[in-house]
Amino acid sequence: MRKALIVWGGWDGHEPEQVSRIFADVLQEASFEVELANDLEAFRDADKLLGLDLIVPVWTMDDIEQELVDHVSAAVQQGTGLAGCHGGMCDAFRKNVDWQFMTGGQWVAHPGNDGVEYTVNIKSSSSPLVEGIADFQVTSEQYYLHIDPAVEVLATTTFPIVDGPHRLNGQVQMPVAWTKRWGVGRVYYNSLGHHADIVGMPPVKEMMRRGLLWVADGKTKANADTNTTGQLYSGMADSQ
Image (cartoon, rainbow, N blue to C red; front, side, top):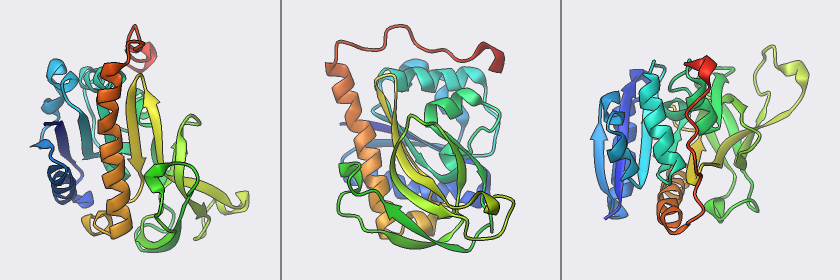
């Protein structure tokens, strides 16, 4: 049985417990053994993380010990999947650039705050992860992020919709969902999910389901690959 660890907490406004339960239900339906933890100490046991198929952070706006980031990073580099959404993954630890390097992006703004109506445009040719999913409307926060140029973008949204200092830059196609590699591990992110009801929307939930399973499937492929990463990346010395 594949094993997943969901670690939830941080800012309560993102409803981390409720979102975690949605993810746990999706994974249990796919026959995962799921552990839910409400403490960053869940990242303390490096050997345990190495044995997981999937890590799902649902933790917003907090600080984290560098050692714990190193443990997650080492596990992903060696094949454990990493997947998450909204601020629970890409606004988890604003002060830690190693976390941001691993996840592929960092939230910087949501002009108009909650309640902005916008379109999510699926890049239908980019990946089977979004095959058959149509563009859809959502009313929520519209995330403006700083993005790793190495990511493969699966969906976008168009800025600007509301006024702000960004408007005179003209239209920007901002990534909403993406994948990337970290070592031989797979990473998936989706910027939707301000509240549990957004995560529960059928297209969002289906995107997350596919992303969760895709990154977890990477563990088996990584174990079968003899050409692994070699020496592990242990972070930027000037960020620690």
